[in-house]
Length: 405
Ligand SMILES: Nc1ncnc2c1ncn2[C@@H]1O[C@H](COP(=O)(O)OP(=O)(O)OP(=O)(O)O)[C@@H](O)[C@H]1O
Ligand SMILES: [Mg+2]
Image (cartoon, rainbow, N blue to C red; front, side, top):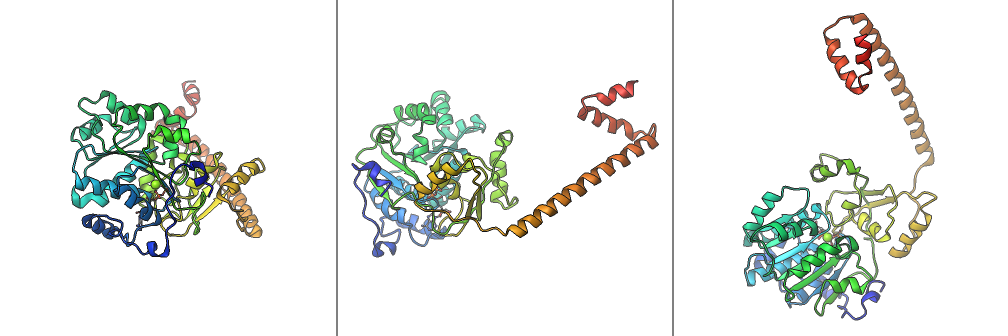
């Protein structure tokens, strides 16, 4: 077991048996009102990771949860937290740390969907969004705070009256990412201001090999709930994925929402969107650039084929990527077949594209000439002022000089 070999000291949960496959949420110890909520979401039975993790969490254990992408890890930590919240209602009860804003909103939606009938209140604390409204949300003392580390620190340091000294649950979703170097300072600061006496859940589809990193999360006698025997990609795989240029990054939520609403059929994304995002209608993921960290591959392709659906992932490999590609194959423990393309068809398309480009160029040229002629004909036409005005801006004022002559 590739993953379990990394944490030999952790007790391992047994693999689910056929009997466990037929378990209900109620069998796991989930309280009736939350079972109903699952039912309303169409969750007819718990997923494997939920079967493994929920009873342990309800017993008060710390958890390291490792399961493939799209396997319901969010529910696996949200349900026991909501269950515990019902038992001992308290404000600022749980904190979920996630690496990205988009993921924070998604997790909050899931808490709200599961907890709406019990009136759970969540606050999403992430960067790129007005800090003031977040301070107001925190002042209302929500039950669950879902945050990216950086912005949470801002509020812990600067928002009067806000603290997490009574916190009962800490979740690190995409835990290996949260425990990574780039969040080190923030996470250490957060860990210093929350109680040691708390429950801690780490969840991800990939986990860090470094026990040292895991130790930073200060788990207490954690139980490891791992449902896959290695870092698996889902069996029924297909997908959708491309790049978003950094200049559009403030537009991240906007484009994602359009995509989720099916108003856009292609989402261009960087690795920011590689983890955790759950958009059921994603059919294909194209790795336009090969991921340099092999584990990122698992998260990226995991944006499709979620929750038992099928999906497709296509990775572009150039002559420079062969080593990286082999590393990925090694990590996921399988050789990937060549994506079948009809060379003739592709060549025909290339011809058509080239031809279309030629026509486009010709039309542009003709159009340009027509414009030039009509400009010459128009003489002192009033519209020309406006047109020249625009052109001046585009041509950096060149035409202005000519006009002035
Ligand atoms: N018991 C269930 N039955 C059916 N669907 C479920 C169940 N639990 C969760 N789901 C659905 O499965 C989808 C994937 O869940 P989730 O986002 O929690 O996956 P994940 O394991 O966190 O994946 P990733 O590693 O990519 O973050 C969601 O749409 C969720 O609503
Ligand atoms: Mg997830």
